Length: 346
Ligand SMILES: Cc1cc2nc3c(=O)[nH]c(=O)nc-3n(C[C@H](O)[C@H](O)[C@H](O)COP(=O)(O)O)c2cc1C
Image (tube, rainbow, N blue to C red; front, side, top):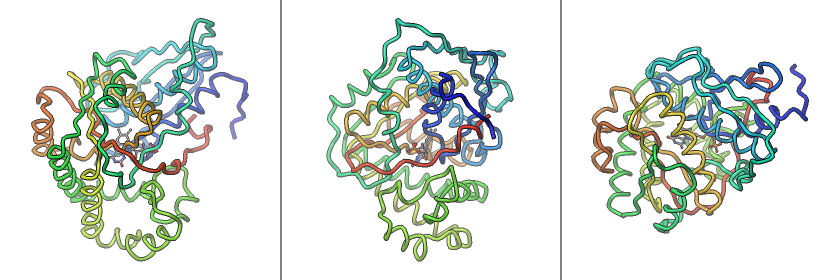
């Protein structure tokens, strides 16, 4: 067991950093301490999902969200986080190297101000409930845009009914494509928690509670409608259910948002992750529910046609990359997903 000094600022900031979002709640972060003040962040290769995320783009987005939380926590403690991205040099954009993603030095600095978004870190949760169907006003989208440095990672938004319906159709089709591949199904089943018992015995993944189902409903669904046995023995029925719920989730959104970048280098992905985290924290502050919809923008070849379709629909040039696509709306909150103990990240 690793013994930590709770007064060490690095421990305090890491406890906030690991509350960041990650694909399937894989938590693909590895950290090390160097000297008195440095944190080294790398990608944990054992937690990549190469079927669903073949070039590791989502893992680097998640590393960006981790760094954003870390930065907010440092400021709240009166420290400046000097973040040096890819200190060993420019990494390849399609393979995941062992090189660190960042060196972070924490320097005490009285001039830093606490950012109010820090307070939202423990309250930000991915919400898979059915949303109320009320439109998200354009002013709210404006506030999301103002929550981060917009210049390199523009935010797109629409609450047009026809567009939402078209995204719902594409997202449902994309879910079917995602689950038509054995490896991708295997990865999803590895991180999906079918019952409360599975939730209690794991410290990663996500389950029905994040879709807003109460205890009794979770018991019946996990036992009779969507059990691990059924999903494993009949991936087709798992896929059918996932497709149906994806269509309903997206069609009931009060708006669709997306973050894109001009390039798709690792630094773009990390930047997009930081932007996404600030957008989600701001959405939480505004009382907005948010859920990413990643299947239509996935990088595996089976999705190429559909990905072009979503670019066309949203008016994003084919030369740019949509890093995050998400639905926004109004819904009751959902419980937090679990995290591994801090020592397991070292
Ligand atoms: C890059 C990325 C892609 C994601 N894609 C999806 C998605 O397609 N559907 C979804 O419901 N959640 C998606 N999520 C949300 C994760 O499942 C969620 O962050 C994780 O389960 C942890 O839960 P939390 O966000 O409530 O802390 C994504 C998150 C990230 C960072």
